[in-house]
Image (cartoon, rainbow, N blue to C red; front, side):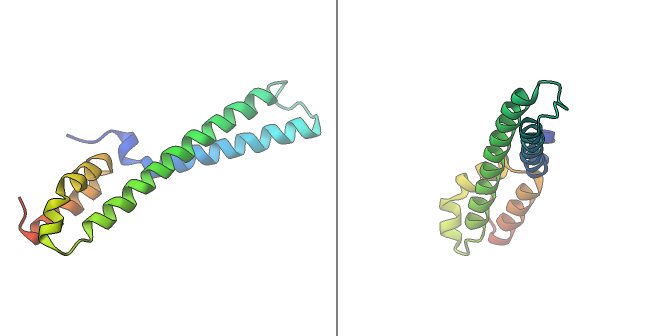
Amino acid sequence: MAKPFAVERAMELSASMTLIGVVLDVVSLTDLTTGTASLGGWSMWALVAGFIIFVFGLYWLAGFLRNVRDFKKLIEEQSKATFIKELDDVEYLAWKLPTRYEEELQEKKRRLSVK
């Protein structure tokens, strides 16, 4: 079964969301400070929405990068005994990450002859 689009493209989506939040905040702050009213009086709401989008995107991006870091640390283990001991954690992280990480886990299990 294929993974959801949000899981497969988590890096791109979270980075885009963070960037969109920053752009929205910059535009609304520029509008508020110059008084041009290009947003038609919605500058304050756009600032709040941009901040919320930025925070959510940054949280999602940080969680994704933390999971990738933890996965890489666990998958680099050379000892078969230690790898088997940590196998549940590695499989859970591979499940939460895009498909390419599951494929990397399967390759590691095949190299170490782990079922």
